[in-house]
Amino acid sequence: MRSLLKAKSISAPRVVISRRAYANMCAFRQRANESEAGGILIGAFFPTKNEYHVCVATRPSRFDRRGRYFFHRDAKNATRIARRFWSLSDGQLHYLGEWHSHPEPVPRPSITDKITMGRLRKDSTTVAGCLMLVIIGQETDWIGFWSESGYSHICFEIADE
Ligand SMILES: [Zn+2]
Image 1 (cartoon, protein in one colour):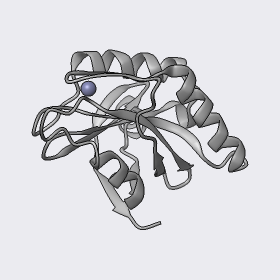
Image 2 (tube, protein in one colour; image 1 turned 180 degrees about the vertical axis):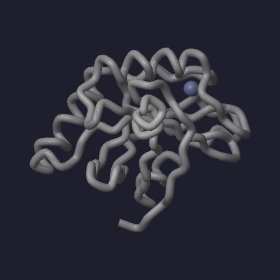
Image 3 (cartoon, helix red, strand yellow; image 1 turned 30 degrees about the vertical axis):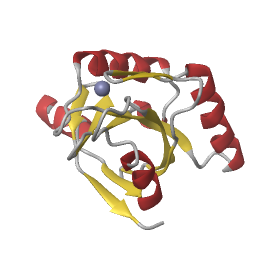
């Protein structure tokens, strides 16, 4: 019984990212000497299908601090943006998580990423208590999903919306 419950709690959701949101992130691949970039993911959650649709990936703002190997997004500005989408969409679009770039061909979450995401998940108001992280590497991408039982690497699909 216990293993059944556990298996259910970590069942991977289906994640669909709009082509426009994905292009917004890919524009910041660190192929040369660019600084890390990042932003927040906004979209809808469909609980009956356990499905997330990422509609918006915000671009770095002038309030964020960026370097070749770090990206600190400004919390106040991100909260303001997330609230605006939420109210303009009548509560349909939520803050779903974070994205940032890494200067490595095949990206993996760093220790800092894991600590930050764990803390953000606890401290943020999120749908279903889960948070996703997209990392845009120099050649490939990585997407993970943080829930109360930890995090797992998942797959995503790109869709025209
Ligand atoms: Zn990172």
